[in-house]
Each structure stands twice: as structure tokens, then as C-alpha cells.
Image (cartoon, rainbow, N blue to C red; front, top):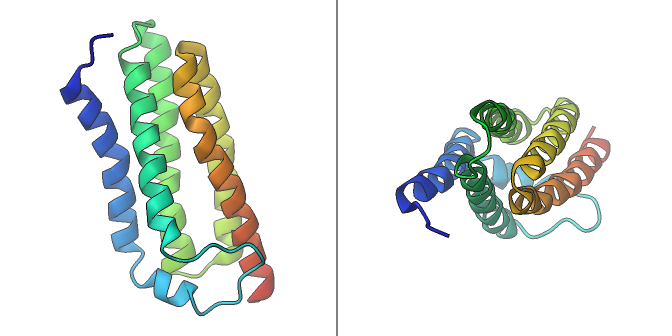
Length: 157
């Protein structure tokens, strides 16, 4: 396999940049997050940026695999379009949740994100199976985030 390093690095940089900008625009959300009542199994605050960095990197690698798969341009464009939409929805979730503390709205936004992740995963699988596999941890984490989000809503109304 001939790795196209420039494309790979760009594909990884895109979700990392989206995540970093979203975190920046979320303000002091993590500080406030530490003060709210949290459901059981809530991880320590330091774990979130670690997990998200890993997930954004995996997303970038997955998008690279799709981009360089050799699949039809139409199929690739459609898969990457859904990927881009879910990345945009992901971008706004942390702002809604952390910056504005709109926990219930953020939960419904997260459901939208979850559905878009599934569509992305399926489209990626149809093009290159390992690309779909790389999206699975993201789906699992967002599922867990949904539990945390809804729990925080219930405990802090």
C-alpha cells in the first residue's frame, strides 16, 4: 500500500482542527462541567481531550481510506459529504452543551449526530471496510456521551 502522506495528514488535521476550534469556542465549559451533578460512570475531565484526540485521528484516517480507495467518485463524494455534515454537527454539540449549558437540546443534537455517524459508518464500510471499522469507537463514545448528556440533564434541571 502506497501511503499518500500529504493527503493522510490533511485528512487527520481536518477533524483535529474542527475539534480544537469547537473546544476553543466552548469557552470555560469544562470548568463548569466539573461543578454540575454527574451520573455514575462519569469519567475524569482529563480523559475527554485524550479520547477526542484519538477519535478525531481515527476519523481522519477513515476519511483518508475512503478518499484513496479508488471507489467511484460519486460514491466517495457522497460518503465524504455525510462525513463532513456529521463533523459539523459534532462541532456544534460541544458549544451547545458546554458554552450554553442547553443540556436537553444538546441531547437531541447528539441523537442527530449519532444517526449521522451511523450513516457515515455504513457508507464508509461500503467503500472500504477498515474505514467503517475506524468509525465504530466514535459511535460507541458518542453513545456513552448520550448517556452522560441525558444524565446531566436529569440531574441538573
